[in-house]
Image (cartoon, rainbow, N blue to C red; front, side):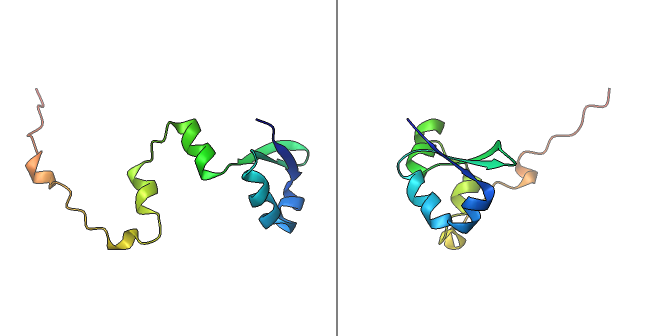
Amino acid sequence: MTGRTVSSREFHRNVSGALRAADEGPVFITDRGRPAHVLLSIEEYRRLTGGSVSIGELLALPGSEHVELEPSRAADVHRPADLS
């Protein structure tokens, strides 16, 4: 997998170009000549992470404001502290 390197200034000037380049491979973004960030397509990110997504990431997706969650109450798992 080859990648493209762009400066942070170039990235800010041409975000859409960086996004298109990320479809072909990672885009390394430098700050003062040093690698600072990597832009990946979501497919590549999922491949690297094994496809796992946290519940926080899922709840951050558009449309997730309509998801109803009913977490267990703290009283259901409460145990007195053992202070001995």
